[in-house]
Image 1 (cartoon, rainbow, N blue to C red):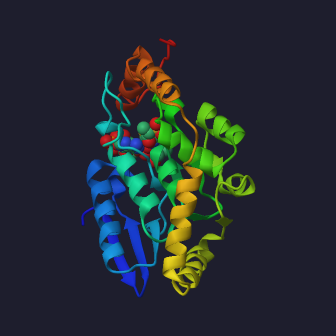
Image 2: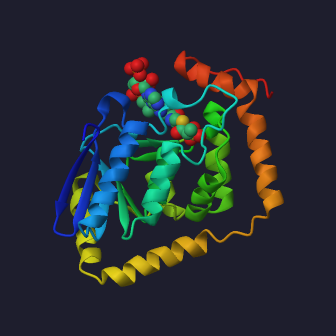
Length: 259
Ligand code: YXS
């Protein structure tokens, strides 16, 4: 494992993101390691998993690895995209996944955190939903992850501004569970993990799956889905999408033309 560290203490699995050079960007390689770690923990009866970064990080994760995004004319967040696979693996992991956050969280990493069952963050943490910053058309199930975590009004503000939101605000609007002082964060998170691990795993597994099925049960007609997919294609075929990716790589502010 190059980009993550693993530990299993009793029934508590811990995955630590450790790819500092890329600010824990969710590259295909890092995501593959996290997904296989979760599969391994499920086989070893880890009844709760903590997903964290190394202590002291400034950036918990910089989000999707932009260098792996297509430069245009292809859906950047299709079914097989690593980020999509990571979110589905967390959502279907047969036990609670707790995101323990210190540092800043960006783009697809915010969705990854919100796909976790419980989010516990240090006060200085921030969360920035960034598709509008890069000109990316976020995908349908990804938007549902956000809608399951916050009111549509809050999701609109996060998505339209792409501005980082403080842990305090995120907790106030119910997007995360707890804000805990940094020097207490690990103890508090492990305490909750032990409480969960001491409870009945089958009951918890079924309740987690019930909640996934029920929150995902949104009536979207085939026509409605096709309309959204068509609109997304307009975006990823646009000049603006290519400009957003190019500007990021050239380390300059993008100039969006609305076409
Ligand atoms: O110049 P070098 O080669 O050292 O590389 C720089 C950055 O290019 C690189 N890096 C990334 N590489 C790939 N994907 C990324 N997401 C990414 N973020 C950063 O890491 C090296 C150090 O970055 P630098 O110099 O900017 O560090 P910093 O400490 O000054 O600033 C840290 C950040 C996180 C504030 C800054 O790197 C930043 O704003 N990164 C982009 C955050 C972001 O917008 N993420 C969204 C990615 S796209 C995504 O998740 C979805 C598709 S969507 O957009 O739809 O949500």
